[in-house]
Each structure stands twice: as structure tokens, then as C-alpha cells.
Length: 597
Image 1 (cartoon, rainbow, N blue to C red):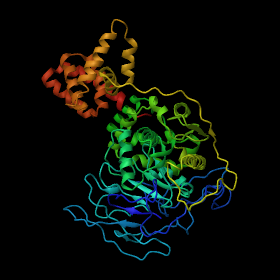
Image 2 (image 1 turned 180 degrees about the vertical axis):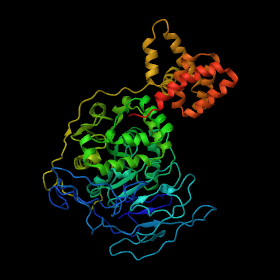
Image 3 (image 1 turned 135 degrees about the vertical axis):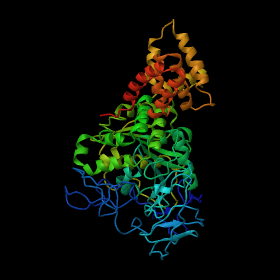
Image 4 (image 1 turned 180 degrees about the horizontal axis):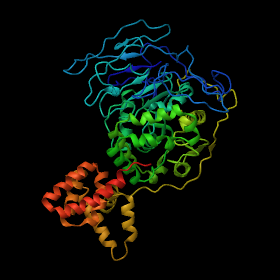
């Protein structure tokens, strides 16, 4: 049974530590039997037939392809395997009229008030609505309450589209995330996180199987999938918002699976809040994503050109060439997800990934961990996966053939099988402390039919104990800030050319210029870049102008703003100095803001 809410999530009393309470008045639902193998659920059509699209697990994202049926994930053929079947029309997963929790609200000037709600009697076997719930037909339109920035769920105007079944719109507060539930209300909670530039729909094809065993909680990153555009500055902040959302729902302990940046959030939670995470799956993830320079440059490109360059290159980053050629509908769906993302939130996520580095802390992840990667992933490939497995004490590696970065989309059956195997085994080992099963719920000790995953989980590798990081001093803080502002390539080049004669000077610059002045809170980095560009032009030190023009772009200045700074210097510092500066800055800006071919 699914619930829809446009109000701030309220804490509820969970029946046991780890799962949300059932809906008031809802009959108790037993956890379904364990997975019965890849062919346990009959699929529509004969062998080789193209399966019908899935039912709409969530509403259409802005720009999501519309069809004669309700919007949902574009289905793809799976050669050599019976496709996953859509949900049956009867039973606990049958479509139900959503419940929209409502509270009295006062319409403000220029802001829409709550829309009319038509009451209807509950269906047979359906839970009665709670004290503050009014059942409405599925065709009803729910109008979100006013939000501080934008509107809930990304909708605008006096009449918003109907909320996705089972979805929860973010409240407009930056401390929570937009989310939705699927699966039995009394089952253990499995949280699933998306990749950068995607929405919770990237997991649509895992939901039919996973929701038979767990209460699936999916969330959108800020500014993704119509979520309010409250940018998060770091991976840790995303984790804090996720925990705040779960706290409001009474969910204390949970399993977690995340793709790419979603995996980074899970790893961060396992490090900072190990008592909350029962088991972990890191999909297409890494302890450090590429280089900080490339993610900061990606932010510069988006700030200058918008998201179109990222949307255009998404298929080659996310899918193998053969899959992209054979599944044009899914490719277009992926492109539309990127195009409809808020650019500011995308840039903030790039900055968060640029700063993310847990290589020295992997040994402190103490939960059973599955590291799953596509064999052809060119973004976070098998090498990064093996780094995770080598560092996490209780980790297993699963290599999925025929998949690139978005393995859950490209090879859904293999990913579903591996997640089912991992979380079933991991939670059996952790039942006393994780999410206990209610006493009267029983399940067989093993599947009744042989279970053969498409990809296999490798045994864990013995690893040495991780070395705890040492506290930052001024030099270490200066090195960190210098790399963030000037880029790793620049700092590495300077360090490589340093010798016994210049190394003390480089330490002086790092410790005092970057560890003290650039690290002060009195000015933001944008302002410091403006001052630095002006000072370099005034003093004629154009040898440093190229590096600081790149730094200004990374610190958030646009090419137009840099032009204004240089025009201002022309008035107060002289035309010749500004002319030379324009020539240097022009070359750098062209290099940094030109999208990839």
C-alpha cells in the first residue's frame, strides 16, 4: 500500500526498531517469502517478446516521456532471460487510491491554497485512513503547500499534477529530501539512493522483486526529479538530510544501496552513523570519484553552458554502446533526467564529489558490504571497486558483465539478484541488532528452488588495518584549500618542480597564504577571487593570472563576471594592463568552458 503526502513528515511509533509503523487501521502484512529464483514470477508474452512498460511506480518527472500508458520506466528487452513481470492487479501491491495527509493551511497572496479533496469509501481490504487522512480518487490533483523556494515536488502554478503513488514530496525545508515508499508497511526498510543526474526512477526495474521482501525507501537528490532546489554542499550534508527524513518517519536502522553519489552517501553514513546502517551495497561507487579537477571543471561547464552538454554526453558515460544503440527510448529517458535537473544543485553535487575522499577511512566501515560494478563502467570501474573491496574489511565484489555505469538500468535482472542475495544474507547475520522480524513472521531458511545469480559475488579479501587520519594543521589546511581553488594539476606541477632551494618558499605560501588568509571566514571565495584577479592585473603579474582565472571559474564566477572585473581594472589600472589580462583570461575561459565534443 502506498501513501502520498504533501506535508512535513511526522514521527511515528515503529512496531520494531527499523521499520515505519503500519498505516493506522491497516491489517498486518506478513513479509513475503524469500526470493524464489530468477524465473519465479511469470512474465508477459512469449520468449523474445518485448515486455510491456512497468506500471507507474512514481509519477513522471518533468520532461519524462509521456505515452498512452501512465509514465514509468521505459522497458528494455533482456536477451537470454525471462523479463521481470509487472505487478499483479490484485493483492497488497495492487494500485490503491492514495492517502493525502492534509492540515489546515491559509492561502497567501499569490500562492495557491490546498485543492479540493473528494472523499471516497475505502476499498475492500484497504486500511481506513488515519485521523488526518482523506482518501481521494487517483485522478485528483493535489496542490502543494507554499514552500520557501519553489514549490514542493518541483510543480508550479495553481494546479499541480497528481502526486506519484507512494511518493512523498519534500517540504521545502533544506533538512529533508523528496522520497517515496514501495512494499509492505511492516517489512524491514531498504533505502536506495540515485546517481548524479538521475531520479529515483533509475531503480524502477528493481522494485517488483525487492519490494516483495523489504519496504523500499527511494529518494531524490536536491533539484533532481522535481525536488526543491536546496543545494547540498557535501556528501555528508546529503547524508544528514537523509537521516533527518528517516527520523521524521520513525525509521532508525535500515539497509542501504546506492549508485555512484548515492553510494557515497551510504559509505558516509556507515562511517559516521554505523548504528543506523545494517548492511550496505555500493553500486558503481568509489572512495574517491575521479579527480577534484574534473568535477570542478564539470561545474564550470554547467555554470557557463547549462546542463545540455552533460545531457548530451550522459548516454556514453552511463551505458555500453550496444545497449545505447538497441534501447533509444531508455537513452532519451536518461537524457531528459539530466535536462530537467536544477543546474545549481548539479554543480553543488559536483563540488561535493570533488571533495569526497574516504580512502583512508575504508577500514572503519564495519557492516557487510557488497561492491557491485559494471564490467564496462568507464566512470567508476572495476579498479575503483577493487579499491573499495581491499579497504572494507567485510566486503564482497560483484562484477556485472555487459553493464556500464548505470548497471541497475542496463542489467536489471543481475543487479536485482545480487542485491537480493546480499541483503538476505547480511540481514540474517545481523537480525539481533538490525531490523528484527516480528515474532509471528516466519520464512524458510533457504529458497525452495536453486538460486543462481547472473553475476557472482567474490570472496572478501584480507586487508590491513586502516590508518587513522591525522588532524589538519595550517599546512594541511592550506594544501587542501590550495588544491580546491587552484586544482590538483596545478599544485602537483608546483610540487614536482620544487627542490631544496624552493621547497621552503612553497611551504610558506601553502601555510600562510592558503592555510591562513584563504581559509579565513571573513570573505567567500568568489570575493577573494575578484580581489586576486584585480591585484594581479594591477601589479602586472600576469604569470599567475591564468591559474587564478581557472580558480575564479571554480569559485563560482562566470565568464561575464570575470569580464566585468577586467573592465573595472582597465579604468583604474590602465588599458595596457587590462588588455594583456584579457588575452590571458580569454584563452583560459575558452579551455575551461568548452563542453566535451
